[in-house]
Amino acid sequence: MLDPDDLNFYRPLSNVRFLSKVVERAVAVRLRRHVESERLLPDRLLAYRPHHSTETAIIAVHDEIVKTVDSGDVCAVVLLSSEPQRGL
Image (cartoon, rainbow, N blue to C red; front, side):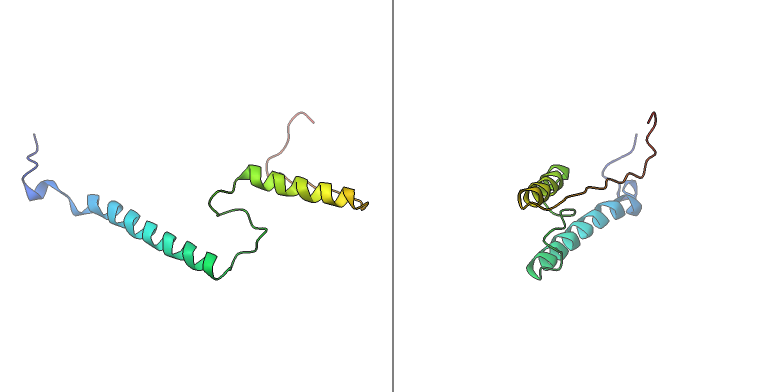
């Protein structure tokens, strides 16, 4: 059995992953703050933001369609998929 009091038991490589996660998290928090404070992302960009999801995007598209139709304009929606549809 390995002795937990022996310093040779702890390999330096096992700590690298932990340290990289801590640094990654710190950088991500600071980068997000900077991007939000400087308003570097468009308001309509819903990805990469907290509290935004696929549902938020669908609601935004639905809202635009309803506004367009209510104003009497014509609306067309094109849906693209990277996966081939089977059975159509």
